[in-house]
Image 1: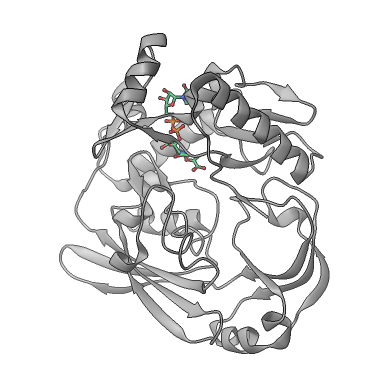
Image 2: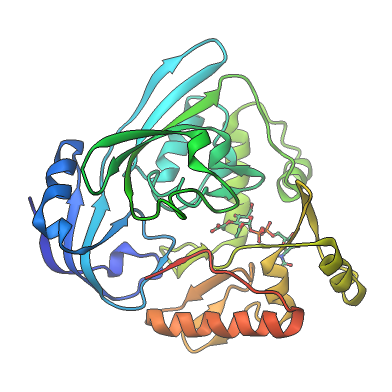
Length: 337
Ligand code: EPU
């Protein structure tokens, strides 16, 4: 096994933070998983599985073993007149899978175009955008038990998906390694344009949706106009999660801000964290090398050279400011290491 020492992770996290891992291995073959999990280097060290590094903030060197998921392969495993079942290995880039699916004209993932990260990491936080979440088309997940190296399958119902959350982020955190994900997609048109921004874009541009690619292209344009490209400027997408509030709190905020955007979702009221941050004056604000993006206040950006600790400190200022103005607690979406 090729375990490397003192490995630089700068290129493996989209914040571009410069940190080192004590031990590092690229896992490119499923047959090597058990051997790795039973090895002393793995057993005796803290472990971190890394995909695209697009949802992580390193605040210090990692004094353990980093396993980079490089398991590749996308295949159609079953189909019937209505559905197709596609299995993707966890080390595939999420957007490569979306491109494969969209090119084959299957419906289900088109709203999730252009999201950074890997397929294996996507279900952990139930990635979502433009009215769709990965859970909507996920069929099952294959995992390996970190203690024993044994393979196990989780059906969708066992994954306890919620807003940016799953069982793998909560009670089973650190217990399993996700090796592949299987999706159930539609052969017939199954458009989800409920999200206002998408609906408006399609209307304004007079796009008549015929193929998943029509939606995918629209999403790519919307995202490009709002979200910074991590290849050009360090960021991890939304840094915080949106907040769900009760109707009493909603009324209280509405009294002060008639323009507050509130979204009702299954009896819950969502208040966009981006709006709260903007109202507190952080949109486009920069301190040193760190700032909140000028087109989407939920995205924290590293203009270059910021350390993880500096980014964390900055995020704490934003949290404090939203708390003092609204009495609401922002939670980070990004994982802090
Ligand atoms: N808003 C503002 N100011 C801002 C940003 C947003 O007022 O600077 C308000 C606006 O009212 C806007 C509303 O917030 O209409 C919603 O904004 P947007 O459509 O950009 O979505 P979001 O709720 O801020 C979520 C996801 C994004 C995803 C978008 C689109 C979370 C934490 N974020 O953001 O996901 O792309 O919806 O569906 O749920 C990510 O997770 O990394 C990510 C980028």
